[in-house]
Length: 239
Ligand code: ATP
Ligand code: MG
View 1 (tube, rainbow, N blue to C red):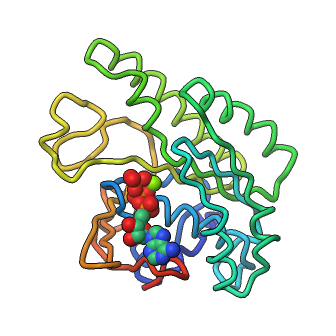
View 2: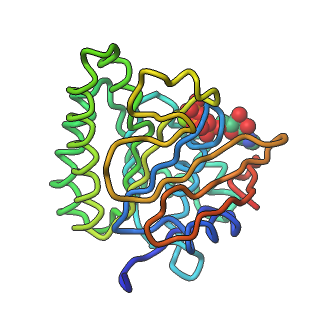
View 3: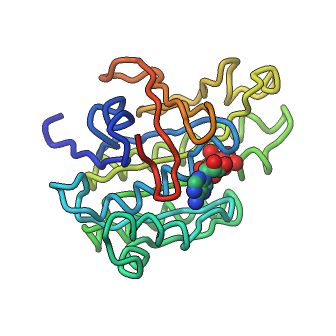
């Protein structure tokens, strides 16, 4: 694991939970209820990956697959400015792609192989969210097997990209706070664990008081379980 690199989240506490930051060669899943901060973290890491290594980045670019239309250029610019970076330049180094349905989302990831093999400065791929289109298109018990098969294949493709090209992959997954809402949905077990079997790191994000959030490491293969507190501020993710 010596060659794994890390990208800072902007919070030392959250970085600590992650063993130093978001790792390359790994898929990191952020799951949690609406408004918990998954998209905010994705925005922040897309900015931070561009920082030089001494500041916690990889001097790299980001690819942002946006399935919910929640990518915000203004938020990227604010986060960039707060770090003393040129907002326009930072925005240019984030390729955002709007995925309109599952087939489109899958096709984009299939094309990434080609894009990334030609541009080795891409060090982060975000899929925000990985599950929304799948849930909408394959609702109902009779469709669950097909949905799981398709989603698993898609996730494995992302994991392979991370491993082959030494980049970080972050996917988000909305899980409602009330676990009883999830009876009948086998991608989400009571308590919020997702049940697809893909290697990677899973972090649950929970709301706390005001702008405070709690991050919890779940089932990490090489990291201790634990919880930390971080904040979502107007300048981005902070302690
Ligand atoms: P969903 O599951 O609905 O996609 P999410 O986990 O992606 O939710 P985010 O959109 O990342 O949630 O978080 C939204 C929260 O981030 C807001 O409720 C607010 O608390 C905080 N936030 C967003 N923008 C700012 C800002 N400019 N300044 C301060 N806090 C902000
Ligand atoms: Mg979101």
